[in-house]
Image (cartoon, rainbow, N blue to C red; front, side, top):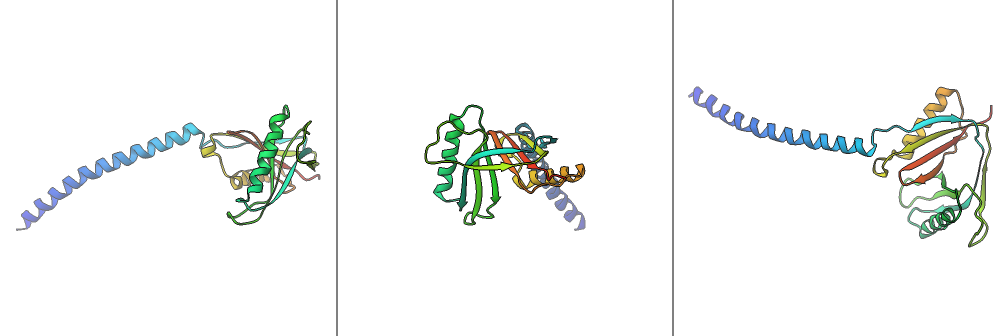
Length: 191
Protein backbone atom coordinates (compact mmCIF):
# COMPACT_ATOMS: atom_id res chain seq x y z
CA UNK A 1 0.00 0.00 0.00
CA UNK A 2 2.79 2.42 0.78
CA UNK A 3 4.50 1.79 -2.60
CA UNK A 4 1.26 2.79 -4.37
CA UNK A 5 1.26 6.12 -2.55
CA UNK A 6 4.90 6.79 -3.49
CA UNK A 7 4.29 6.07 -7.18
CA UNK A 8 1.16 8.17 -7.24
CA UNK A 9 2.85 11.06 -5.44
CA UNK A 10 5.93 10.96 -7.64
CA UNK A 11 3.75 10.93 -10.79
CA UNK A 12 2.07 14.18 -9.71
CA UNK A 13 5.41 15.71 -8.78
CA UNK A 14 6.95 14.98 -12.19
CA UNK A 15 4.07 16.53 -14.10
CA UNK A 16 4.03 19.57 -11.78
CA UNK A 17 7.79 20.00 -12.18
CA UNK A 18 7.40 20.14 -15.98
CA UNK A 19 4.74 22.84 -15.65
CA UNK A 20 6.85 24.73 -13.13
CA UNK A 21 9.87 24.63 -15.46
CA UNK A 22 7.79 26.08 -18.29
CA UNK A 23 6.38 28.79 -16.02
CA UNK A 24 9.82 29.68 -14.66
CA UNK A 25 11.30 29.77 -18.15
CA UNK A 26 8.46 32.03 -19.33
CA UNK A 27 8.92 34.33 -16.29
CA UNK A 28 12.68 34.45 -16.92
CA UNK A 29 12.14 35.56 -20.54
CA UNK A 30 9.60 38.21 -19.51
CA UNK A 31 11.99 39.61 -16.90
CA UNK A 32 14.89 39.49 -19.37
CA UNK A 33 12.82 41.30 -22.01
CA UNK A 34 11.78 43.98 -19.49
CA UNK A 35 15.39 44.43 -18.36
CA UNK A 36 16.65 44.76 -21.97
CA UNK A 37 13.86 47.26 -22.73
CA UNK A 38 14.69 49.31 -19.64
CA UNK A 39 18.38 49.27 -20.56
CA UNK A 40 17.64 50.26 -24.16
CA UNK A 41 15.49 53.24 -23.01
CA UNK A 42 18.26 54.41 -20.66
CA UNK A 43 16.66 53.34 -17.38
CA UNK A 44 20.01 52.51 -15.76
CA UNK A 45 21.71 55.72 -16.87
CA UNK A 46 22.70 57.94 -13.94
CA UNK A 47 22.53 61.74 -14.21
CA UNK A 48 25.85 63.41 -15.05
CA UNK A 49 26.56 65.81 -12.19
CA UNK A 50 29.20 68.53 -12.21
CA UNK A 51 30.16 71.72 -10.40
CA UNK A 52 30.18 74.75 -12.70
CA UNK A 53 31.67 78.15 -12.02
CA UNK A 54 28.88 80.49 -13.09
CA UNK A 55 25.93 80.18 -10.72
CA UNK A 56 24.13 83.32 -11.87
CA UNK A 57 20.99 83.06 -13.93
CA UNK A 58 18.30 85.44 -15.15
CA UNK A 59 14.98 84.06 -16.32
CA UNK A 60 11.89 85.76 -17.76
CA UNK A 61 8.49 84.21 -17.37
CA UNK A 62 5.29 83.81 -15.41
CA UNK A 63 4.61 82.79 -11.81
CA UNK A 64 1.71 80.39 -11.32
CA UNK A 65 -0.03 79.51 -8.06
CA UNK A 66 -2.86 76.99 -8.12
CA UNK A 67 -3.57 73.30 -8.48
CA UNK A 68 -2.08 70.95 -11.09
CA UNK A 69 -5.54 70.50 -12.64
CA UNK A 70 -6.09 74.26 -13.08
CA UNK A 71 -6.52 75.24 -16.75
CA UNK A 72 -4.43 78.37 -16.05
CA UNK A 73 -1.36 76.14 -15.51
CA UNK A 74 -1.70 74.72 -19.02
CA UNK A 75 -2.21 78.23 -20.39
CA UNK A 76 0.92 79.45 -18.56
CA UNK A 77 3.03 76.65 -20.05
CA UNK A 78 1.52 77.17 -23.51
CA UNK A 79 2.27 80.92 -23.40
CA UNK A 80 5.89 80.45 -22.30
CA UNK A 81 6.49 77.59 -24.73
CA UNK A 82 5.21 79.88 -27.48
CA UNK A 83 7.75 82.53 -26.41
CA UNK A 84 10.53 79.92 -26.36
CA UNK A 85 9.66 78.89 -29.91
CA UNK A 86 9.72 82.55 -31.06
CA UNK A 87 13.02 83.36 -29.34
CA UNK A 88 16.12 81.98 -31.02
CA UNK A 89 18.39 80.05 -28.67
CA UNK A 90 15.94 80.15 -25.74
CA UNK A 91 14.97 77.14 -23.65
CA UNK A 92 12.15 76.41 -21.21
CA UNK A 93 12.92 76.62 -17.47
CA UNK A 94 10.78 75.71 -14.47
CA UNK A 95 11.24 76.35 -10.78
CA UNK A 96 8.79 74.63 -8.46
CA UNK A 97 8.80 76.70 -5.27
CA UNK A 98 6.06 74.53 -3.80
CA UNK A 99 5.62 71.09 -5.33
CA UNK A 100 2.15 69.55 -5.13
CA UNK A 101 1.77 66.33 -3.19
CA UNK A 102 -1.46 65.48 -5.04
CA UNK A 103 -3.78 66.67 -7.79
CA UNK A 104 -5.67 69.06 -5.53
CA UNK A 105 -2.76 70.52 -3.58
CA UNK A 106 -1.61 74.07 -4.19
CA UNK A 107 1.59 74.46 -6.15
CA UNK A 108 3.78 77.43 -6.96
CA UNK A 109 5.89 77.36 -10.10
CA UNK A 110 7.85 79.86 -12.18
CA UNK A 111 7.74 78.98 -15.88
CA UNK A 112 10.20 80.96 -17.96
CA UNK A 113 12.90 81.21 -20.56
CA UNK A 114 16.54 82.28 -20.43
CA UNK A 115 16.45 84.95 -23.16
CA UNK A 116 14.13 87.95 -23.18
CA UNK A 117 11.72 87.59 -26.10
CA UNK A 118 11.45 90.33 -28.70
CA UNK A 119 7.64 90.10 -28.83
CA UNK A 120 5.52 89.64 -25.72
CA UNK A 121 1.78 89.07 -25.91
CA UNK A 122 -0.37 89.40 -22.82
CA UNK A 123 1.74 91.80 -20.74
CA UNK A 124 5.19 92.01 -19.27
CA UNK A 125 7.09 89.03 -17.93
CA UNK A 126 8.33 88.53 -14.39
CA UNK A 127 12.09 88.33 -13.90
CA UNK A 128 13.75 85.72 -11.72
CA UNK A 129 17.36 86.58 -10.90
CA UNK A 130 19.65 84.13 -9.17
CA UNK A 131 23.16 85.02 -8.18
CA UNK A 132 26.05 82.85 -7.19
CA UNK A 133 29.57 81.98 -8.11
CA UNK A 134 28.90 78.29 -8.62
CA UNK A 135 26.09 75.87 -9.27
CA UNK A 136 25.75 72.13 -9.45
CA UNK A 137 24.29 70.88 -12.72
CA UNK A 138 22.72 67.48 -13.29
CA UNK A 139 22.31 66.45 -16.92
CA UNK A 140 19.73 63.78 -17.63
CA UNK A 141 19.45 62.42 -21.16
CA UNK A 142 17.15 59.43 -21.37
CA UNK A 143 13.75 58.34 -22.65
CA UNK A 144 10.90 60.19 -20.84
CA UNK A 145 9.36 56.85 -19.81
CA UNK A 146 12.37 56.02 -17.64
CA UNK A 147 13.45 59.56 -16.68
CA UNK A 148 14.32 59.67 -12.96
CA UNK A 149 11.90 61.57 -10.73
CA UNK A 150 12.71 64.99 -9.30
CA UNK A 151 13.31 63.69 -5.78
CA UNK A 152 15.89 61.16 -7.00
CA UNK A 153 17.77 63.84 -8.97
CA UNK A 154 17.54 66.27 -6.05
CA UNK A 155 19.00 63.70 -3.63
CA UNK A 156 21.87 62.95 -6.05
CA UNK A 157 22.64 66.68 -6.34
CA UNK A 158 22.55 67.06 -2.55
CA UNK A 159 24.89 64.07 -2.11
CA UNK A 160 27.28 65.54 -4.70
CA UNK A 161 27.20 68.93 -2.92
CA UNK A 162 27.97 67.29 0.42
CA UNK A 163 30.86 65.32 -1.08
CA UNK A 164 32.26 68.55 -2.58
CA UNK A 165 31.81 70.46 0.70
CA UNK A 166 29.26 72.85 -0.86
CA UNK A 167 26.04 74.23 0.61
CA UNK A 168 23.09 74.63 -1.74
CA UNK A 169 20.70 77.59 -1.80
CA UNK A 170 17.74 75.18 -1.84
CA UNK A 171 16.69 76.15 -5.37
CA UNK A 172 16.41 73.59 -8.17
CA UNK A 173 15.69 74.92 -11.65
CA UNK A 174 14.87 72.56 -14.51
CA UNK A 175 16.02 73.49 -18.00
CA UNK A 176 14.03 71.45 -20.48
CA UNK A 177 16.15 71.16 -23.61
CA UNK A 178 14.13 68.42 -25.26
CA UNK A 179 11.69 65.64 -24.54
CA UNK A 180 14.58 63.39 -23.55
CA UNK A 181 17.10 65.94 -22.22
CA UNK A 182 16.80 67.94 -18.99
CA UNK A 183 19.34 69.86 -16.94
CA UNK A 184 18.78 70.68 -13.27
CA UNK A 185 20.61 73.71 -11.84
CA UNK A 186 21.20 74.04 -8.10
CA UNK A 187 22.96 77.29 -7.15
CA UNK A 188 25.58 77.03 -4.40
CA UNK A 189 25.62 79.47 -1.46
CA UNK A 190 28.50 81.90 -1.42
CA UNK A 191 31.08 81.07 1.26
